[in-house]
Structures are given as C-alpha cells and as structure tokens.
Length: 146
Image 1: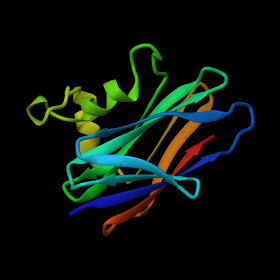
Image 2 (image 1 turned 45 degrees about the horizontal axis):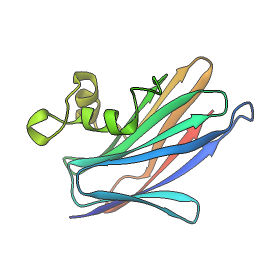
Image 3 (image 1 turned 90 degrees about the horizontal axis):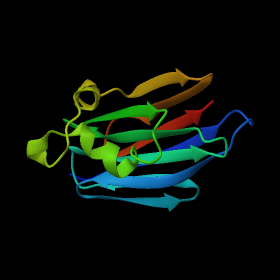
Image 4 (image 1 turned 180 degrees about the vertical axis):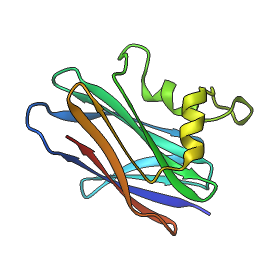
C-alpha cells in the first residue's frame, strides 16, 4: 500500500531564512513539490524521506518523515556538520543494516517510537513537526521553524 505525506513548511521568525537544500528517500519513494508543499510518495510502510534545510545564517537541520508499522513517524536532527551530515548520510541511519540501512541506535529508536509530533529547541530556535492527518494513505504534516 503506497502513501503520500504532504509537508507544509512554516517559518515564524524573520531573523534567518531557511531554504530546502536536499531531499532524500530511503527505498522506494520520490519527493515532488505541489502548490508550494513538499510531497513524499512512498511505496509502502517501512520507508521514509528526509528534507535538509540550511539558513543564510549557517543554521541547518533535517526532518525525516515516514511510515513504520503502518503509523506515521518523524524525527528532527539539528546542528549538522554540513560536510558530513547530509540527508544521504542521515536517512539510512534510521534503518537496520539487514534492511540496507546504516543503523544508528538513536535514529532507529526514533523510528520505533512512531512520534506523530515532536519539537526540539537548539540555540534559541525551535524546530517542530506535527502530523495533522495520521490515518489513511494521504498523510499531512506541518513543519515549523521558529
């Protein structure tokens, strides 16, 4: 069963401008932009995609969103090393090596938690996501950069 996750991104502070720098998928999916939203299409439960944002101030973060055991989930990683922590590196860390991932314990644990909302504050900036539609095959989520 395939899923779409429509992502609306909101920036609530004007002291930095974040732009989308990278979009990645772990197995069997694509990202598109539709009417200003980022839309992840995945082939089945058990995969995800990440969006990496970079600000004109050098701040950066990745939000990863997916479906695990037929439930939506997400995670946010902040304070990335831009040379070594890209979406291509981070996204597979959510999956065990036997599934083709690179398995980093705290990321695998985040996937298993199947959080439908989460927020983290780093250096005075709040990053959050909240799934507004959590059932069915057409999921919706808001990402807020504060």
